[in-house]
Amino acid sequence: MRTEIKVVICAGTACHVMGGSELFLVKDRLDESIRGLVSIEGIPCLDLCRRSAPDRRPGGSAPYALVDGVPVERADLDSLAAAITARAIELEG
Amino acid sequence: MKDTFLEISHHQTSKLGQSAPGDVFQSIKCDDGRVVSVLSDGLGSGIKAGVLATLTATMAARCVAADIPLRRVAEFVMRSLPVCSERKISYATFSLIDVAPGGRVRVVEYDNPPYVLLRAGTLMEPLKSELRLPRGKGGAKGDAVLRLSSFVAKPGDRIVLYSDGVTQSGMGTKSYPLGWGDVAVQDYVRDLVASSTEGLSARELAKSLVREAVTKDGWAPKDDITCGVAYWRHPRRLLVLTGPPVSRERDKEMTRVFASFDGRRVIAGGTTANIVARETGGKISVDLKDLDPEIPPSSSLPGADLVTEGILTLARVASLLESDQDDPSPRRNAAHRLLELMLDSDVIQFVVGTRINEAHQDPTMPVELEIRRNVVKRIAAALEAKHLKETRVSYI
Ligand code: FES
Image 1 (tube, each protein chain N blue to C red):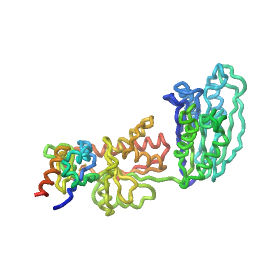
Image 2: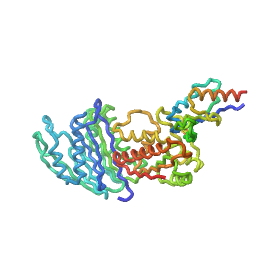
Image 3: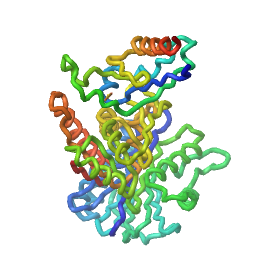
Image 4: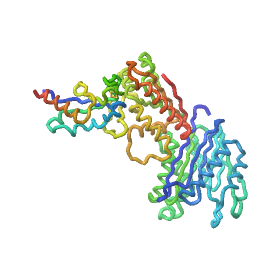
């Protein structure tokens, strides 16, 4: 079993403006059994903000984070925690 | 003077309990390249003193900047200054330095502690001539005595001006019954400069002197304490790279500008940082200790002194520069760190990338470019006007 889930959170302009700064606190939202498996990293820009969203909202679907390389769009604390939890269960099984 | 930069900076603190300082330090850069700085100390403290000091400093600086002969300026200022009816002394004292581009310096002093000229680690004693003028309105007794001196500055010279809040600090305490005193302050300045390994900047020197005086006053300043410093130093250069270049073909060129720059380097912008990292093979890591609710965290990248987010951080730097208040918040976010680097430099070069968008479909991008250009212009203008820095802006 893998022991680490790598979470990369975008600290770029678009993601920050769309509320991404709170994502750095995601560990607090995780179940204790998972918390220890998660490593959090920042990145200056995931370059996903340059894509346009279906509704042409500026900044694409920011804020973005990656959970083991898979993008989470319009992330907030709940949806990011859910994505990490889902990944943990996937690795477990 | 070739390859020297005149750094002028000041620091001050108000008398305990006063919200506004009664001392003023002001500098003007004239069109002919001269720089005029004035330190004025209004009688007493608080708003009234501050207004008088501002009046004096502004009047003196503008007149000198307008090339009116010093004697006339002095007469004019003396005549306009009101005199305290009880104490028969002028409401504001001043020291003025007028620096020509070639390094010729003229100094006029009126009732402030004598200025310090420090050259190659030695306290110099410039010859001073006296100019006696009748005092202003209000029937003050005796003439006012102004002291004039002039010399040609050499690279590495420092001029230090300070208000009597510095020399009188500690007065009444056991260790300094008569205050810190002229001679001791001069020795302190000399020793401080001698003991700093790297050339102590004007800014640091002014700060240290004020801090020392505040300490002598038992951290409760009994008067306004102000220090202004002029320092002819080898220029410190700072490069600020912001925004991706107009086309991908120029990514390499931008990276070359970055890598070959002789001085400190900052990248302000995520995409810009990604480009430089890709081209140089360096790894960026975001500093998660630096979290701040308003400004995105800074990062580190080999070869860069600081990597920050772009627009938001630059906009904050611009507003910090434009506001006259010192930012009271103890927080040190990426914008504060960037500002600190700018203030610690003499020549600041901005390279602004002008790529509009990648996919030609995002309608927000031209706006972003406009914002970036404008905010850089604002920062450059404030650095020039308020901090007498030299700035250059180029586009790539
Ligand atoms: S700012 Fe987050 S992907 Fe660009």
